[in-house]
Length: 137
Image (cartoon, rainbow, N blue to C red; front, side):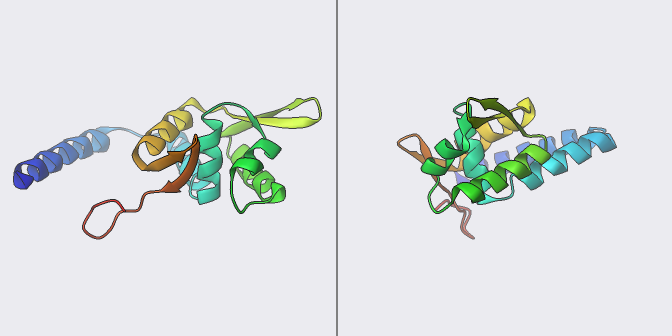
């Protein structure tokens, strides 16, 4: 059974690799992709992005829902995401509100959340890790 499943997975991966290799990426697309992946390479920014999937949030709202981060730290991470063009902000009263602006990144975050994120009371709590045997922990 494992051999059949493993072989099917390998064949699917090979087919995807062939398709991916056949794609013609423009330099601009590569830059956008690299910028997005770089921006998501921080656990804190991933948590922020998971929360922004739920909708627009203020820095204070995000800070309350992310453990071990100050409002200053959350603001710095949001600044990184703003500079990368992944989120945008708008003034609402005395608060700045943030939301995901790049639809491709939003779709990527949905996939990341489905595959890796556990949720407790609607809040991402940890990313699953994969051991050497390929199983999640």
